[in-house]
Length: 390
Ligand SMILES: *Cc1c(COP(=O)(O)O)cnc(C)c1O
Image 1: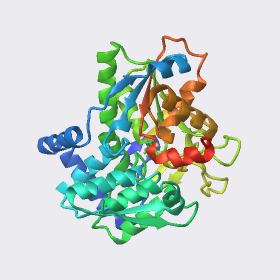
Image 2: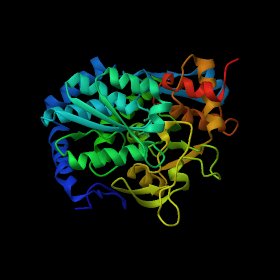
Image 3: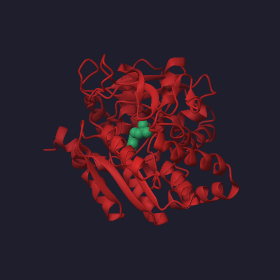
């Protein structure tokens, strides 16, 4: 049984016995409906007319000059809700609907997944509870307000670092006592079947991006880069290019104040295999297996685990995983904003920062696609704190 949902040795589902029926019910429904013609048609209609797909692939020419290569942005920031999270929330929300579920629960870090779930809860008329670390409630308060306006209940979680890890713990705990609720998990991590389901609903990013590359450039890119928190936007865009051996896949983690400090979120760079939130994967932990506190500028990446498929892609070498510092991220945010009139989420700015750091090492005819996972409106307060405008 624990062999299901494996990526090499990673993945599986390590959950309390009482949750097994609930996750098996979700798995069975997903397998039944993922290719069901009317489910697919309804989801596609929502993705098109509600969420605004396809999102553009945009050639950022002024940013390209700054980076020293040709940079194309997959504009998930333009998706309804302001981030890629809407793809997954609509997919799982529709699954909950066809399963006859009336209640949604979800965890959130930066608030983008909570916001997407609250939107879908409103759309489908479902009672929605969002678990959010109290530190994140404070630093992402605009999203908290939005979730409440959408009719969701936001439950602040204190404990641990009061961030995403603790919100997931509390949501799992709540689910254990309320198995009639649908747990709408936000990233391609956690216990099987969530990595499989979230990946499935995010592959639309990669499928579109690959086709747009062929249509708009007449070729595939040399690099595809994406930020990695739990790994859903990255696996969403990587998935379509996995079989294109010449396309290099780069996942960018939160390097915080630096990888030598204890203040970072670079799980694949500095973690070791272990089990967190029901999944065998890389985990930031000490020698006794205690989970490390994480700290980086972007709440959406502030997580000591990562989706199991990324652990596998790292070990097999198909993708590489790097980290950038908070300072680099703030620079990249400022640069894209000033050069292109596009304000990226701090999460997405990690992928841009990695590209900027390659300047001078890549020939100018190199083509890089960056997944711009979300827009930066939610982050302007944090940017202002670090870089006050005088
Ligand atoms: C949530 C979020 C992320 C991180 O989550 P992944 O599952 O790693 O994609 C990245 N960017 C934005 C804009 C987010 O909201």
